Image (cartoon, helix red, strand yellow):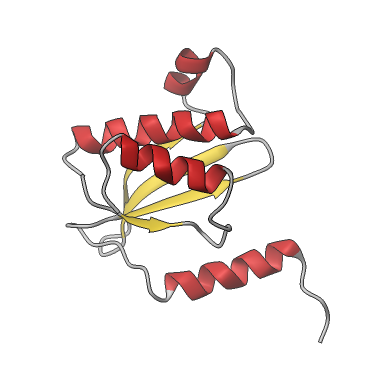
Length: 123
């Protein structure tokens, strides 16, 4: 068997995680994705297949907060966490299921999750 790339290993982990995690209207799924230059997060109701809330380093509101577009740092992930938590609480979403999308729970992903909890989301 050929050696898997980092991306292929992440996709496998994500599939394994998604077998167990499902977002309901009462407890939607908070999914994160990090690319080389940006950090994205969205809250999804899997029963309807709708995105309820989203935030990323590309948002105009993020740009106002930081004064720059994009962000690769842990601080950028924490700012996105503040944004998504604020938007979720405005829509009445307090409890979510965290979907790390195959990324290891370390670094930016861990910082994002901790900041979300600090801002009032429960998971």
